Image (cartoon, rainbow, N blue to C red; front, top):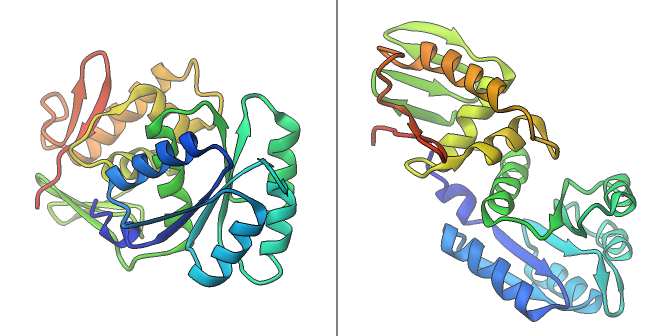
Length: 233
């Protein structure tokens, strides 16, 4: 799937750790995001949000002159920008507090680069819609706006899990998406133990998109790692 529409969105990272800011900024820029701004405090973040008008903000909970929760309350007085919180691992209270304030998602530290990107893309896609996102495969077309496959003129509906599976793979077209990342996309924060269920969904998706599901050419297994989707340009 062409992510150029999302890559033009302006992102603002707020954290008081320069190393983390650089790491997250590099991950996002390497993925193709054109404008990634940073701030190290509540004061800087409010100023940047007013001046730069970002399309998504990623906020750390702990900041030198306050916290991410109070910052979000300030933001909501002048902007509805989507927010992802960075929380310490297993800090359930922080997660609940952030979601209670209306945060769009949270990421527990430490995190894998792919997890960060999947969550950023998911929030951006929910917030900023493109018209009729179509993905062309070998022998069929996927219409994500309708959750259906057009295979030789036959319309085949996708279930919610099949839609999420294909959309996650399409966002990373041509790249390997690990089993863990796919399980998390489909089942949330506790994806362990779902590998057999994932395999079953992959089989059903192949029946819908492949000419010969036993010899897939679009949804490819990368043994020991995960899967990738091959699209036609």
